[in-house]
Image 1: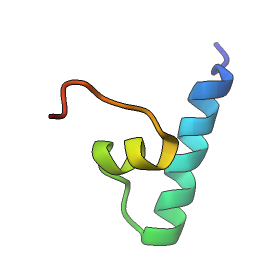
Image 2 (image 1 turned 90 degrees about the vertical axis):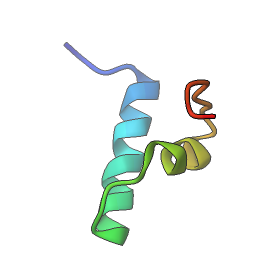
Image 3 (image 1 turned 120 degrees about the vertical axis):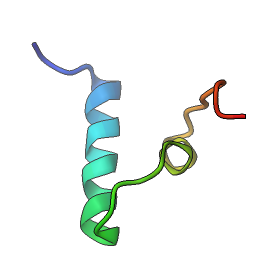
Length: 42
């Protein structure tokens, strides 16, 4: 099963963040970086 472009973009973003910061991004930080909104994080 292949990832969609959006899924691949998110995975790349996570991997790049880990390379730069040595820890994974929080869901909130990932949303800030990608522009995605999570309605259950209020």
